[in-house]
Length: 229
Image (tube, rainbow, N blue to C red):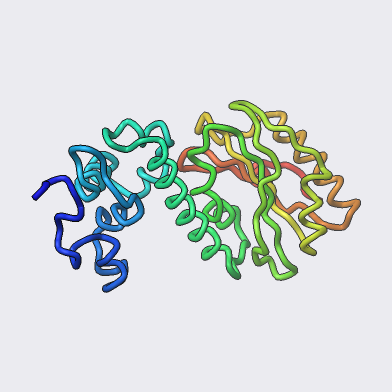
């Protein structure tokens, strides 16, 4: 009996069969990863491969932050499986954001930060997004407007306010990250904010704030004295 074949396990102990019979709640993290991966590689069955992934990254948060090349550093995890795993983990992150965003009320900058921090604080590129709010200050949705280089992103008022008009937002909050991890606003951040606040006044969709996300911290341009009226 091969020690490396998942078929060598009794059917009731195989990850996908266990998920079908008992649901994911009864399974360990390694077993769920094994169910996603489906198969191992020569010399290593899928459960051993999944367990190695768990040990290497330690937590699901660290695993979700790993890039495809970083995942491929694990012996037996080729590009296809690494992409497969990254895609599954990304869906989990998106689900978390959607769940938090449902009827999520923002009345302080920290609430906006908590809504988007998982999406932005580990980004290696500068990402600019807009949070759309209804008349009661609850989140309608957030949308990525631009993805720039390590140091800058191009933001045009048309792209910023199009989703706000389309989804009938009453107001918006601007958000972008600093890949350096330091959320201190740059002069350009203030300039972009001033321009978008002016446009918001013209189209009747006020900009409430502009949040800069760093590594484990944020900065509110409103709290830094930028004008929003």
